[in-house]
Image (cartoon, rainbow, N blue to C red; front, side):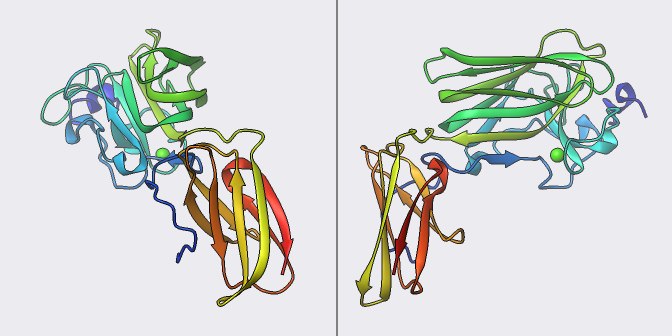
Length: 270
Ligand SMILES: [Ca+2]
């Protein structure tokens, strides 16, 4: 079935700091679009909007009902998804269920802002010229990337304060059909290079206790302390980039505490 036909049918955390789960630099988030069973045809679905809002990204299109939709590979785009069974599919003239067309640009809104965004794109049926632009909350262009691709290629942008990223085919795809998959982004602020971790073990009522501190980390952000590559504690930094967590009880002996987002660690012994 051609896409032309298809378009019609087709912890007890000892150190407690207030923070939003989405605040600050988390591990990179991956949206693979494979979390639900999807239809084959645009007319069977609607433009992607707020499905991933709880992961910090919302999608918009050029009009209230317009925008790409998540489809199964059975949509016959002449290319397999970059991951799983589904991808984000674009077709500039394909009607969607309830109105709107599955056209680009795809506008991704990040809350809190991201500092790096990447997505895989493919023309599938023909080579497309794809652009990804990143803007801050004041609509200033922060970064952009461009790639020509018939099979999968990755676009990526980075910079502080990406509130909006715009994915668009720049007019070369014929037919104007293409797909995207595996959106990866990191929210919040990058950890400063001079961030430092300290860890100290002492006796407490709960047993041997490690108090770990981060200094000069990303301000007002969520960070992850990890003990011996295993147990994790999340904490929020203050406006100076400081955060503190406690691990208790811990075993006797040597321990390492790292702050995952910063790539910084400290050793201590109990
Ligand atoms: Ca996928």
